[in-house]
Image (cartoon, rainbow, N blue to C red; front, side, top):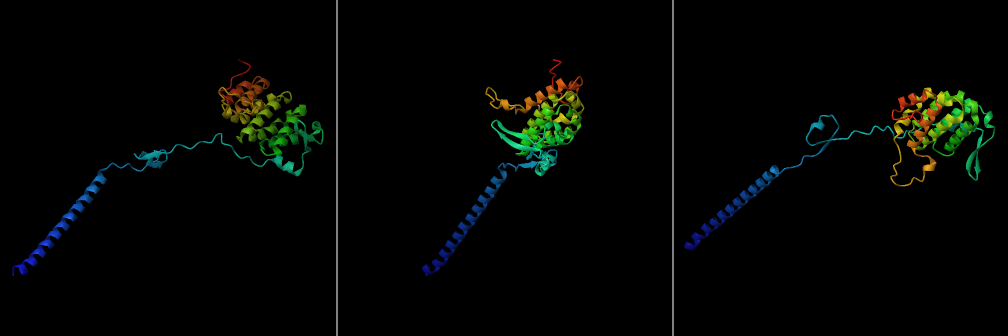
Length: 270
């Protein structure tokens, strides 16, 4: 009888012990979970960085990073429009041909340069200074120099028609085109009498880009610039061009150059 009565009591004790252990395990699990949540909530967390535009509402937040302002692109290269020189050359309207020589390429003129209509051809060749591809670039550059060399008194009446092509070439901001145009301007000033004085009223169209690019120089340190003879340094070319303008422009040249290029110093007064 004792054995029969003790078995149900033992089973109940075991059941109660298991329930107690399960309750304790659940309590400990809940406590660990709450502790983990509490530690996570209390731990310092870095806020997400937000990129914001300057002077906007978001830029005042603590986690905001203000974007730097974009570049103005003052010296960014501009694409040139299709030139009239290319159209006339493709149509075969120019009396020129390419001649290969031992010294390099040159233009073979089919007529005498002195007999050309400078009012028609010289502005077209100046318009081709914007070209950067062969053979247009070569024919425009060499054609301009040939016509300026043989033009004489025919050049002065054409000056007003050359200003817009010169301005368009400089406004491309292309380094190669600017160097070519500056060399052409130096040749233009000495090509005939009174040409330098005739250019003075047009300094406002010609000199804004040289004023922007005047400080672009090659800082080679103690090295040697082996390409110096090619005259491709924009800063040096601009200085040479402004000095040529002052020497050939008459009494009013310096003050007009100084108005457009404030950092220029006279090569005659000093």
